[in-house]
Length: 91
Image (tube, rainbow, N blue to C red; front, side, top):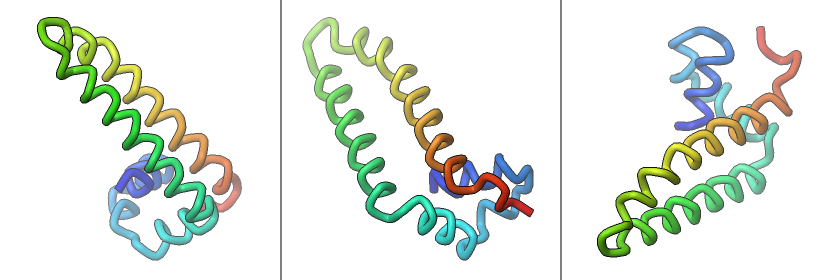
């Protein structure tokens, strides 16, 4: 889903979010191993933030501060992965 959203935004075409062949080609160009490693890293970071959020009294403050940072990391890192393999391919 993340690659589909980036694909749609980069090509400025809503229907590209549903073009499964193109999305799988982009993931293939990135490399399935690299993409799955990225997913695992994001999942682990979410788990860490969720765990910190369970701290009594101050957990919600930690989550409030760290979630925007994680979202920026996710957006920037998937953009870098996508851009590294699609320069000059769009059309």
